[in-house]
Amino acid sequence: MSQAVPILSPLAGSTPSGVPPRGQPLLETRGITKRYGQVEALRGADFSVYPGEVVALLGDNGAGKSTLVKVITGTITPDEGEVYFEGKAVQMRSPLDARDLGIETVFQDLALVPDMDPAGNLFLGREVLRPGLMGRLGMLDRKAMHERTVEAFGRLGVKIQDTQAKVIGMSGGQRQGVAIARAMVWASKMVLMDEPTAALGVVQARNVNDLILRVKDSGVAVVLVSHNMQHVFEVADRIEILRLGKRVAQFHKAQTSIEEVVLAMTGLGAGVAA
Image (cartoon, rainbow, N blue to C red; front, side):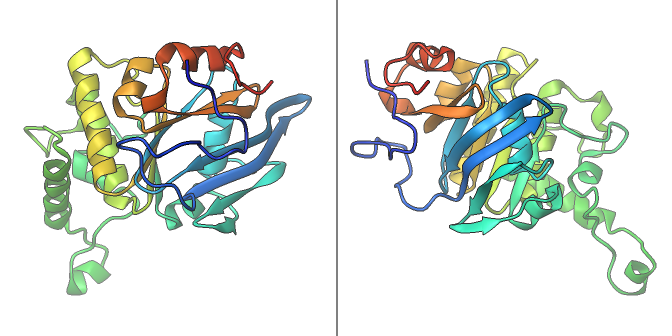
């Protein structure tokens, strides 16, 4: 059995096939602490993601994953610790700060407007105006938005027959495709995906995993939060484990197993920090 990597130590050995070269992290958290009254949701949590990789952020319920995600996306402010982006300390005061850095999020509830079509959702809050006087009067260029949506779907392999239909009538997999495409259209650096295959069937989940790999192939880093170990091992390059509010282990996917990762999550794995 391979050993979990201790906290703060670099991943040892040569870089396995499929894992991006080591170097400066794209995004890194150092010593993040977040308290809610007497409850310490994060206790000096460290985390890193490198350009062009898929890294899975795993942990049991209550490990602090959701809180750390909220810190990374600017939804909440930590009590202690720092966030670094491309080697520089940054302040994530709101989701707009994350967006300005090229970070987009696919939330578990997808955050789609059900009565809008895919183009309306992709460009919500970023609407394209018509040129000239019509644009100055606030008229939307629906044709341009629709064409860019179709192009994004084609690039990512999202299969939706009627791209002008409301998303409320679409399958779970199609809605997930719309949400991922929206993130991909606007993310220049990183996409964070929170349980993207939850409640999906086998075929739909496979399609979403294919989308994740397409996002990676475009050079955009992916942070994947998931409870589905099989799906994690299908797409992730690296795995970082949170337990009781801090990072306790890191693995190269190619050098570990589902069993070893589960042991690390429960605190029973060899080399896992307490």
